[in-house]
Length: 48
Image 1 (cartoon, rainbow, N blue to C red):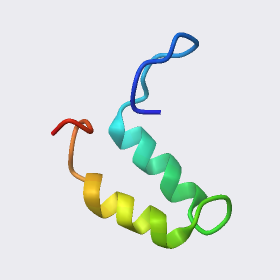
Image 2: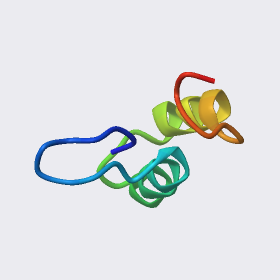
Image 3: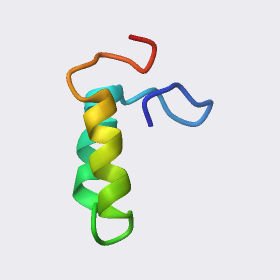
């Protein structure tokens, strides 16, 4: 979601984090989402 794909532009890391937070506990494991959010929240990209 945070990187460009031929079929859609990149959404960016903040949008990707928001999307996985919405899916936590239903389609995605809540503990895995919490860990990913701790790693990436507050960053502009996965490279920072």
